Length: 321
Length: 158
Figure 1: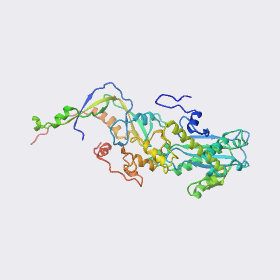
Figure 2 (figure 1 turned 180 degrees about the horizontal axis):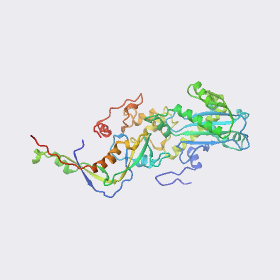
Figure 3 (figure 1 turned 90 degrees about the vertical axis):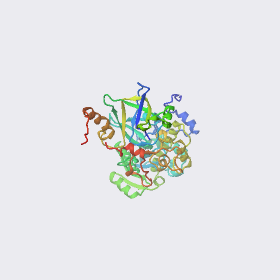
Figure 4 (figure 1 turned 180 degrees about the vertical axis):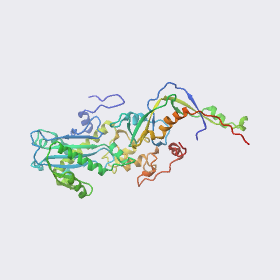
């Protein structure tokens, strides 16, 4: 498959080209990815094999990937299997020690509906794009915060599994914040199941480890595909603590518009420091100021500039209409 | 500082500019930029609305409406070229005999293209476009102005 030579677009890559680019045989592209527009938000679901009865007790695990980084989507995943199905021998128990390659292989196994694992496991992901995350947090009114988004997304994912006829009786959720209030909230929302919210749930419950793999692989491949389509340099892990990432941010920023590819979370402080704050330490040399005329809602650690004479005249405080 | 008289020279009559946007922010920059690539080519329609456009600038969501200029009005994209030698001559000429007359400075600009409609953009607010001050200026005031006849007033000192 040829890459289009027109300047205004690249066709979605073939798996072979993408694999060559990655330089490994870990070129599995999960079905949760839209290869043409990998940077966009997306919902994907798959279910158990048709001959596996739905009307039996199921357990479901919830985990997420990509909450902290400045690049790429935040992905929430649920995975479920019959309570009777034994997950212990597939290598899910110790998800923290899994390499990216191993995770990719495991997801490939899960997607293979010929295997016992693939037949008995269903999973869904909701990927929330960097664009959506940033825009939600940068709204002038009704700012959407990450926790609300996390809880809403999780409840939607679980509800859709119920709606498909699966009788979930146990729900296990990995959490970053305090578990108790969230557990009460979820338990009230899903009284038919026993809900357990805990930190490090992915190492305690294999079904959560499974969900963690679905989320992580989806996010990793989304990021890799976007980088491939942008034909840009390696941006590291995507975390602001990663020197490679901040170097990429600083070197590829356009002083007026920001970054190509809809992959940067503009609400993240690292991105704002580079694009919006005129400081010799962090911003680019060709820094351009944009005044949104919103002194009231400036974030706490951001010192508002006095509006310049130019911007005052633009916004009309100098004339009556 | 901008001078009080601006002369517009219409060099490219007929060249129509299709993509003009009025932004809800002040951008402290004048010059060329890849506006199509980063902005105009990425405009989409807002969910469930025929008239409202959706775009993003520096990560912030913007909602836009297309505004047609009223009949009889035309928009012009102008740019200010570097001062030519004639201006420099006038500015530095101290032997000008007309110094005691009030000399009004002029600035020249050139039209690069014209437009008959543009997009007005706002942040994610739910107020209607009719509240927008630019909309009011262009639609309501021009309608009002066309109805008003101006009289001259003579003030007589007693």
